[in-house]
Structure formats: structure tokens, C-alpha cells
Image (tube, one colour):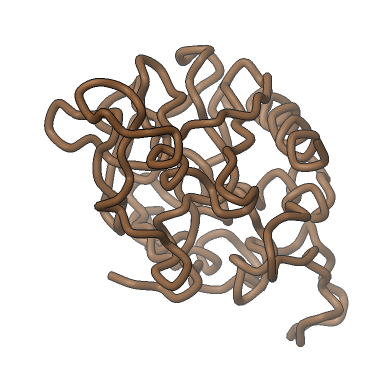
Length: 252
């Protein structure tokens, strides 16, 4: 329930953010920034330095958490909303836990959850870097955020070959289907935030539009099981949910 409350708060903050940014949901970086799992400088004085953007605003590197951090920066949402109690090892981001170059910096001056954002952000967010622009007028029933993606941490991920959805043509058992769920809630399911801001606890990961698996990339015509995402993975279209988070160690 606590985790669901967090995501509901994040959804409301996204609406507030969109009111000031042409109905678009938070997206860090420039128009063609690449997802690398970390921003260039989380303490930077301006966005160009933060994301490593060129003078024309192009290029740069970003993290998934940097997009969520925009809610802390511009809607003054507190960092505790981004930590799930069931996410072992995650804790609330506090500036005093890190050495900062300028002792006058506050949370709203920063650009990400510190130098190791996966420690302070428990949630996965729709892949927006290079993918379709997500606005409040997109499909209302589309999943846009959830508990951490179970395939992004190689040390904790279960065997993908054993994951079989409990629907045709996969013929998996409920136990097989649970192997594709978030790790945080003992594999029982995941809290999912939808674009219309409602949150529900889904017992299977293929809970998006038309049984779309929110944690995997489409594999040909298969969107129920798909394949684990990697850097460079993109949604197949405007109705495809692909919620990802930054891995503990950047990989390319």
C-alpha cells in the first residue's frame, strides 16, 4: 500500500509538471540524448552541463532517474516518494550523505539522485529517450511507471528462459508467470502507474494495453513475453509500455 501511494503521488506530480511543459511528461536531457544510466554531472549549475549537452542542446547522456528527479526539482516532490520499502538496499536520497562542491546547493538545484541514483529511486519509468513523446493526451490506460524492472539487475534477475506467461500460446503456470514480476514484492506482482494516474497492483507483468508486457521489448509480433530490455531498447510504438530503470552498474 505504501508503494502504491508513492506511485500515485508521482502520477499527480507528473500532471502538475505537464501543465508547465506543453502537456509533456518529465523527460530529462536534450532531444537526442542517450540513455547511459548516469547524467554527466548531477551537481551542475545548468542543464547543459548536467546532461553534457552541446551548445545547440543536442547530444548528452541521461539516466531514467533523472527524468523522475525533475519532479523533485520542479514540483518540489520529496525524495522519500521515490523509495519503496520493499526495495532492499534502497534508501531516501539526502544531500548530506554526499560531498557537494557548493554547500549552498539544495535539492532543487540538483539534476539526479546523487552519483548512484539506483540506490535512491525504486521505480521504473517509460523509456522516452528516442521513443515516442509521452503527453497527457496519450492512451489513458497506458502503463508509464512501476516497481523496478526485474531484468535490469543481472545479479538479481531470474532466468528469462523460465518465464512463461499463463496465457496462450505460452501455456505457463501462474508460478511460471510470476518469474516475470518485480523482485521487490517477492514476485507476487508489481504496483503500476497508468497515464490516467490510477495505480493498481498487477499480478502479471503483461498488464499493459492488449496484454503488453510492461517490462520487456517487443520481440517481433510477441508483446506478451518479449525480450529483456538493454541500452538502446525502444518502445515499438505509442501504445507500447516499456518501463525501465537504471542498472546498478552502467552497461553498454
